[in-house]
Image 1 (cartoon, rainbow, N blue to C red):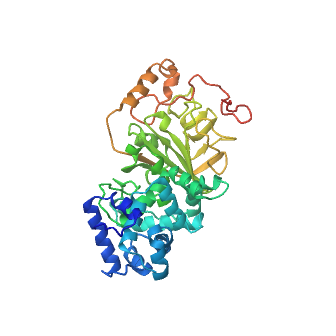
Image 2: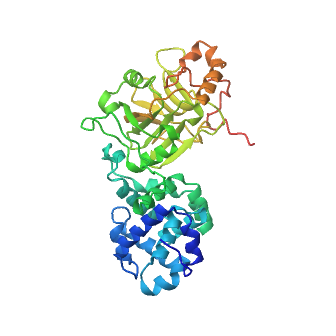
Image 3: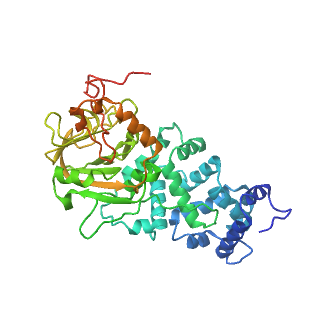
Amino acid sequence: MGAGNSRSAEFEASVVLFSEHEQQQISGIYHWLSDKSRDGFTSENLTAYTKDHLTQKLSTNLFTYMCHCVPCMREIAVPSGRITEEGFLVTVAHILKASPEERAAVVACLAQGEYGKNFIHEVLDSYSLCISKSEELKSWKLTEPEKRSQFISYMLQSLFQAETVTIGAIETWTSQSPLCLHMLDLIFHESFPVDSGLAIRPLLPVCEEINWARMSTVLTLPSILALCQSLPTDRRSPWQPLFNSRYHGESFATMSKCILDKGPSLMVIRDNRGHVFGGFASEGGSHCFLFSLLPHLCIYPATGYNDHFMYFNQGQETLPNGLGFGGQFGYFGLWLDYEFGTGHSRGEPYCTTFGSPTLSSSPNFKIECIEIWKVGSDRALSESDEDEANYKRTSILDKDPEAKAMLCLLDKGPHSEGIRDTDAQADIPGVHSIASS
């Protein structure tokens, strides 16, 4: 793909972003699109080429971007309805090698002013097209109906905090939404497969060691994407089922046996009123988080206010028997009772450990089903994990025999700090509030 004197400055700035091999690939895609016509390609040509990766609406809006937002194409494409090779390369540069400002301009044109559910709906549909034949998606059997409104609200929450939706607001939103960036990057790289040395895999874990004929999940594609994005990068894949109450039965003892010493895990609960929520138990306590999937999708990472990340006790009568995330005795952000079948989520006004509200349909809830997934593969103890283990060795949990009932769900000894030198009223509603800095 040579560059003559007639080429625009924009083309000259774009072509140097690609290697010679990449330029040849772009030229090959263009010739397919244009059917070797010197006049360029039409919107219909683009839709036909991207039908396995873009919805028709996003394809149409992308063509509009090429016509109106690529300066070197405005005088040519608008009257002719065709995109030249020069305009195509500049567009590919904008979507594959984009600066934050260029990316925001592309998103603004793709959205066509519909910055709410319609745009994210189209992006999710396109993403689903792109991963439909992937190893990751084939390893799952997702049968729950997708509640997309929750996912859309989750994706757009930071954008809607802006007073007006401007290019600057979109730029800020995309920079603060790694999940949106990932989805757009994968869609564009699948639509225009230019070998830039950047392999983008779906943000969907491979599901291993599961018999879908005997087991099911309450998770959906949008909820898995949101959870996976929130996990540490080395824990995003693969996932393996450790416990499922519909398969293993309703027993706290059985659940404990299935999950103890198995490493980091995700617990997903559906209560008897349809709320879906849970928590992530990590090796490094500060990576733990709580989440809600239904009726709202939201992730609640550790606030840093205290380190009451996990609590687990089975068999000791001097302390409550059960499993808890965050908060204090009687006021956990999420608590499962040893008797199995009941729990509580007392976050009014919030759980100080994770900043989470009440996750369940009511503060005291009844369990319909529980799933626990091992996330990531086994690995050696990292330096940060060793630092945390050293910290625990000097803590009150290792000096108080009763406090040893606080065990982590992982494989490295005490990990729950539910009674570690704290304000005894730290999570009792109406008594405690976070002090201002």
